[in-house]
Length: 131
Image (cartoon, rainbow, N blue to C red):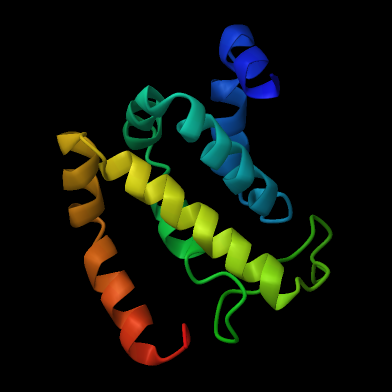
């Protein structure tokens, strides 16, 4: 119901602006929102590609790993740590978003290729961090 309301109200421009913000504190929440939105309405993939949101989701595939960028709060202090289950859920939602962007959408496939998603996934899988 909440996703349907967001679609009818037109909240996407605001969610996209938050996603592109330099503050990382709430980006994990935005990944969850976008995963649910795309499961409800996959045509939103065009908005994400057009507005250049893919790099965020590609970086999010690395969420919770030791060498991943530190998430900080607006005042610069470290954000609370996430459990390994939360981190795995975040990576899964990012993968769902990226796969939805690629599904039956050639511009999304091209953008993922141009952003080297395949190379990023290959290096993650060969690093042993997913084991």
